Image (cartoon, rainbow over the protein chains, first blue to last red):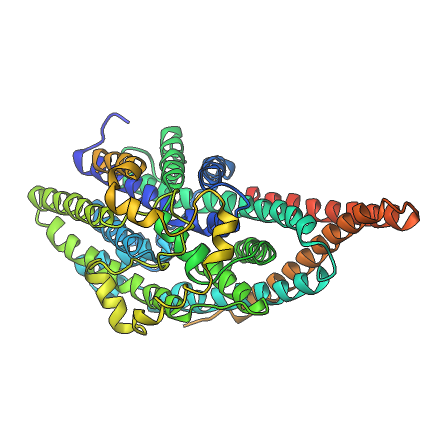
Length: 444
Length: 75
């Protein structure tokens, strides 16, 4: 790695930051239901997921050949500036959706970012319109339907089959099954998503002439990509975990098991058959399905609607940010510097906004807070999402009837009293988040 | 525009069948294990049968998990 130019260096660092946001954005996919049913303690769950993500990064040596999954024509020579701008767009969108507590696909954010940056710098000609429909739109609609239906039927089945069994005895079994399924999801995530970052870095190294075309990624690329995604997973996107685990529906152990198993099966089936579905969409769909499947289960469709609206916005929003970044970055060194400074400033701003109502492992199961970003003004995106989706007031009263079971399950946090505590002493819970931010800002 | 309906249908079918089969078998396993335990006070062959059946169910699930890991590692 002798002749790495400054620009290539910046691209590598940005790719690792994206990998990090990818990790903490997607912790919820594997662990949200595990945490909300109390199968694992929050910290244990994210630690386990982090280790499996790291292991997953080393498991498969087949690196993603096309970082954009064929959406843009990479053969025509994609510039490092364009990759950089695309990554910035993806990172900003990941952070904004995290602030709003919305599970959204990191892969779609990356695709959208690269798409926007390419259109801004090369033009529409380099975009394969058909592939966009095939790789983005259809899977986004299909994934929650497939996983949701499977989870719905599985929930019905398991409740029916175990209706005469002792709930105390079966809960332990459900717990084990759920943890196993969640572990598989984590492992698959590490294999898929860490590969994506490795692909980006390798492509940047090839464009910069550091390594030969068709070369395998150097070991340090694999190690750093694995570590970045594991670190992100460990720090945990608690806001998203809360939305997925408590915001959409209240999850009981059989539902958690059914949802997580259907998610694991769907992810493995789709990647094996070659029709890749977004992990986030699959898991959200599975949680909704299990909510419908239980008798008396309530799905908060306003939260679900806002989430789906977020999925629709992911590609264009990341694309627009990336397009702006690409236009700036192509002005030369000062443009790249400006984009980098703006990106760091925006990330810091988003983090500061998040401190107003912190969510971490201590209050992640606290249902007294609605599963979304809450009443505070959370920024442009939340406002935009609110305007396209049913108004949030519907979400506020919905959680009220349900807090008792979820709190007794969680055990460690005794209900609503932790809310004023958080407001009074935000510094107390902020250590993990602060650490994360420090890591992010030194990387960026 | 070329939508691969066959692959989509395959994903749909495989996910549905495999999920339901796995969840069904696992549920049978835990139901068998718990009924084996509650009836063991009375003794008798039923509880032994239930426990053996539940172990078979868990073994099946473990095989499914192993296959899952195989799918993840093999490209």
